[in-house]
Image 1 (tube, rainbow, N blue to C red):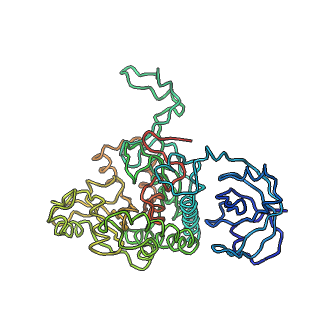
Image 2: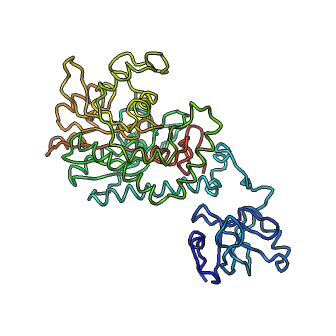
Image 3: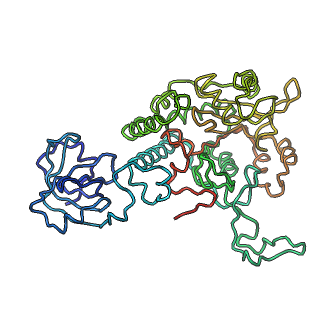
Length: 481
């Protein structure tokens, strides 16, 4: 007989039916009641043991964490806390668990402790909920683009280009690091490396995505990206996943419309399909915030915050308008911002972004037309403003509690202007001829954006550390498994 998943049994009314349940023991109390979970849902199913007629050696092996197979009859529960239970007729131990060594006991564990045993944290309710939501969001992303006729493109993980010009990349090499081949000037001779040139792990699939968009029209990438930034904050990872659509014939407004539509679609899908998990995470977050001062607690609970993003049209304004608001704001006037806004051209920090969303507009915000000096080379240049200031057609989407969640732009499709911009920013033109070719052979206005998937999961789950929304986090000094 095939075993039945616990999620299905908990919703069943097929009383009297013989079933097989397989899973891991959460608790065993009074030598009579087993709570078993198989990962299909947050809920456990209670198994009632016939203590008198169960082998004593088997009873001793019914410990927290052990894997079991139970055959029995599904019955209506007479006890509180569950609607159904299984009256066991036969129990088999599939895998023992030493109670003296198994680190997950029936009590609350800190997230810091669970990060130290990340190979087992999936078995907790918190991480069951987080990764079920992550799964739903991933599916919703693919569904969104598939329904709109986008082509899913797999862009390279190993690349010879630096999409951001940031220089914070992981090098890929097969050279002997103790004795690499060298040129006459002492520099490393990468011609003897595996690819015959210097290569890195990618920080973005955008540039390659643009090539495909200028053939298919609308494409998206969704894959791992890497950044060798020595940052130990709660918002940074060295390996993370990016969703990057690129659309031919899209201008900045079209780009903003699509990004807002995508965010609302995936949040709505999570609310529709993960109600149990999100309710659990909402309650968990409220419990966690009880220890914080009132001023540091969220104004909205998790579900209210998600619906807040669905119920409001995102506020759209330029960087210049935002700077004026921030400069006149009370936190800036009273020097409460860590980074004071004093002049146009400043790079906005998370505290400024959150002020605009949470205090000033009280809705998600899209900022556009940033100073050219603080943005990437591929963004389309605007005409200088009345004061001669240069801006680009960039757009960032800001969310409550997290700040920037999407960054994008209309791309610079004009060959001469792109070349000049690359020269200004010291981007090696000869290495980027493949990218520039798209501006010479049928160039069109086009746009795209990047959505950091872990930032999205962080927002939707209400977790506070990005290391808790990816199964195996890679951070400075940490590459376990």
